[in-house]
Amino acid sequence: MKFTNIMTGAAVALGLATGAMAAGHEPTKVGFVYVGPVGDGGWTYEHNEGRLAVEEHFGDAVETVFVESVPEGADAERVMTQMALEGADLIFTTSFGYMDPTINVAAKFPDVKFEHATGFKRAGNVSTYSARFYEGRAVQGHIAGKMTESNIIGYIGSFPIPEVIRGINSAYLHASRVNPDVEFKIVWVYTWFDPAQEAEAAKVLIEQGADVIMQHTDSTAPLAAAQDAGGVIGFGQASDMAQFGPSPRVSSIIDDWAPYYIARTQAVIDGTWASVDTWDGIGAGMVAIGEITDAVPADIKAEAEALRDSLASGEYHAFTGPINKQDGSVWLAEGETADDGTLAGMGFYIEGLTGDIPQ
Image 1: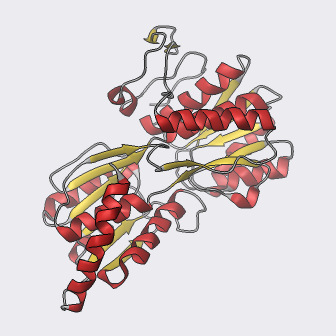
Image 2: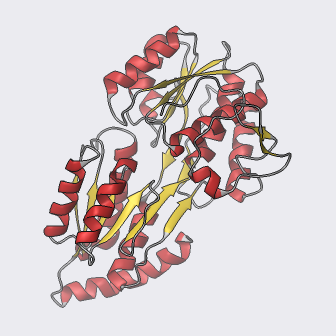
């Protein structure tokens, strides 16, 4: 998706939408379902920033509503149903575990458009969207591999789904390429947002010798634990988490959903919305690498920025061979790159990672 072209159209059509409001038409109603609180400082915070951007962009032509901290499962289906019954024209469901509830509710409300984040099931009125977070993990892995002194990197995983496994593999691949002695220790917490569990996982990893903590969970608790421990660095997850800079937070992956949310809302307004799958990364601006702080030596910072730029331009793919699977079998030959289908369904570790992926 080319946001620049869409956004130009959105700006023009906004005038039409505002004019329609003046003529007495109801505003387009856009709903958001969040797995965490809007104040989580990470994943949900950035989705809510996207919602606020929609409000700012469209003004009175659009009304937004949201429900936060909605568990994945029956509660999600109930919330989505209520939004549809209350007149939502477009509903964004922003967590992987909302996939089946989204499909189920969409079937009951064929005139409502649904957008599901990070899933793979689509329908005539259901689109999917995600970001190539693994590109950001590559940059983080490079920094981690260069900066660790213990050669132990701790990784807090939420759920063993392809999105999280891709991130672990990408981080390890790029850490081990600059530091062959690096070891990853992984703790699965089976939650997206639970500060107490995330903090405990970070503490366990630090006790096991990790001097770098990476996370695919949503709270700032792992960074707080790193700060308390001293001598441990970490990374902002989904948002900048700048309150922990310049250390322990030495950089971050920032999710920018605003252009996508604005473009898809505009498509509903002008009647061009269609079911699509969008998977964009650093180049499209959906993934940004936050400031690399002065806690990172200048040479490592320059290398990380060069890696970021090569990923953004497409000159380099984060999964470029040679790469073997964990069992030693060849996955990608020298110079070969991974296809999106394999990445989307990734359920294996690459060579060098220890332990099994939980089932």
